Length: 246
Image 1: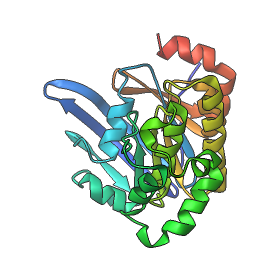
Image 2: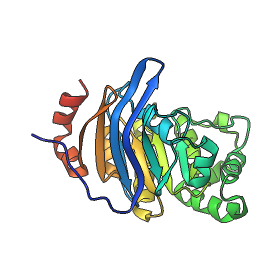
Image 3: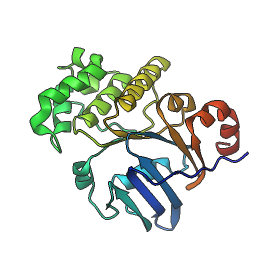
Image 4: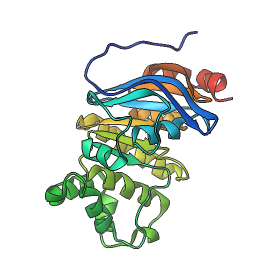
């Protein structure tokens, strides 16, 4: 059974070519080549330590590639600073969420708007509240007093306040109850279906991923070992898990 697939080069928001990333002498990514088509949701799957977070951090500019290139909307950004990548239109929700715990929900959202959309705060915050009614109910609550699932919603909402063209999500289901995992999955699917941005989703929960993504890549030990369409993931997730996660 072959899991490898090629795609036409059309409307690519993100193009990664021959990427290698090293931590000193340790190779974290080797010859990674992938792309994200405008308006789609792409899954990056794999076990812990596969290189998924390293890849997101490199796209965001927090790590620099040793070899290869990254293009956003046709522009090379391999040597671009993280704050400039945000201004180009990339928002990154890390595993740590990076919220300001002493600030309220609305203040965290306001900070999210500063990089690209400060003058559209009011209209964008209403959009965020449509996706996340819980945040509207807790608009004056300090972030540190919220549950893990609510904090994840706030982190995603804050990222949306920058009007991203690409949304990077690193393990949004990690540490959440099944109820919140289901709710986050529904919201991400709604964001994808709205067609206003592209999504690059790092996730170990294959069932959550299948609700959101159109295509997937699987990383193992820093290398791409498989790719395919979401239907292949739905129909063969156990075989994929046995082959590439163990």
